[in-house]
Amino acid sequence: MIQKADLNDIEAIYSLYSSVALDVSKIYNNEYISAVQKNGFIVALEEKKDIEQRIINDTLFVVFKENNNVLGFLNVNKEIYFPQDADNIFWFDKTLKNKYFHSNQSIELHEIIVDKNHLHQGIARQLLDYSCRELKKKDIKFLFSIVTLDRLQIALQYYFIQEILLKGLVSRCPLIYSD
Image (cartoon, rainbow, N blue to C red; front, side):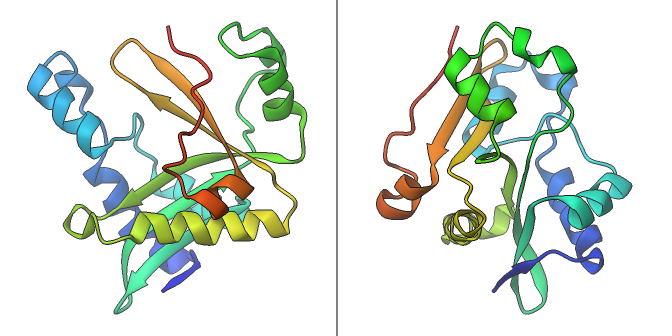
């Protein structure tokens, strides 16, 4: 069952964060990098107080529960931590930059994390579908996600909410930047 995260979910969410946190001491180990790129990772581990603030303040923070256990979560919010001079970011297409930083119709997918023992069961897909429907009700049209391709490449991907709902995420989301 998908529901809005609440403060009682913090321990379970933190545990899921911890399970996919990148171990930066191993980033030059090709076997480790290959495994984390295949399975997914997050660069920075959230602190519990940060998770609490996200649950309270973010546009959408939902969990997937089964038998009252959190098996996954998804978190989206309007990006707030970019500096005032964010318009000077050179690797970002100007048109998309305007949609990303200056539009009320865009939002960022921060994380979508599923317990590693419950992968390939459709949990992430359900979280994404649910979230897209909720975001559409709020007139959000663009869902952005910054992803790493390897140690040196960064990509900015964006998804049109309608396309996700109609075609599914596998509909060849456009890659905006890759160096």
